[in-house]
Length: 292
Image (cartoon, rainbow, N blue to C red; front, side, top):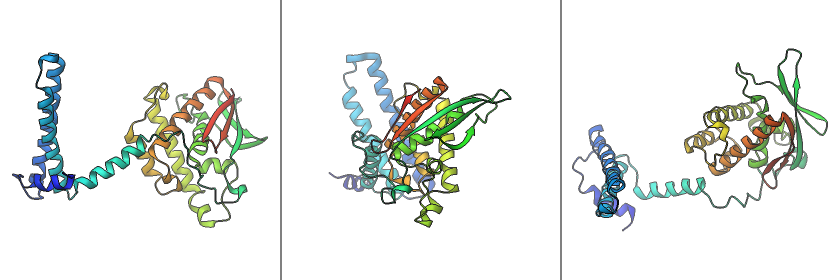
């Protein structure tokens, strides 16, 4: 039996048909109740162990009831169960793809002249400098040229955010996207005025800074992602949502997760060593600290 066929047959036993709020409340409350019943069966299994011999049968029954309510809610919201399943598998495959070891063959700016591409292999030095007022600033240089502006923590509480350009460089290295890194290296795509305006200018930079700030705030609550190998899917979806108008929409949540996790590893090494040199290798989708 296919999912849509099941949904059609299940709808025949609906005791509260219709599309009003009361009709929708019925399967929603039933769904919550059946999930609770399944959890209760598991509680008995934990408590009684092998003595709870009926667990498998009762769990199957509860799962069946859950499926009925899911099909009912979907129908009343105008969805086909099979479409929901297909979209769910797409999202799950994107989130937990097994092809991490095989980066995309092309970068987002491969079709542009070399002088407008993000540098494929480049070193960037982070230097921490003490200011006359006792505050600290981080200065970035590459090939003897200063990149961007000296950065402080810009916070009442010292939190080493002055090293956050490690995030932008990680996005450039691992996603092939960073309007801010593109500005650092003066690689705006002048040959295409529309790309220059949309992808390489102010709004895109603001969005990237928002991503960095959002992720940093999340990481502060998670010990700066030390020994963390997964990020809340809701955060990844938010990042994808706010960047969806830009070319980086081609990157998956899994790619974003890997870039974010790696960016904090680099940030941690730099702030611990009070500076250092990072190497971006865009062809390998890699960023490493080569000289802490």
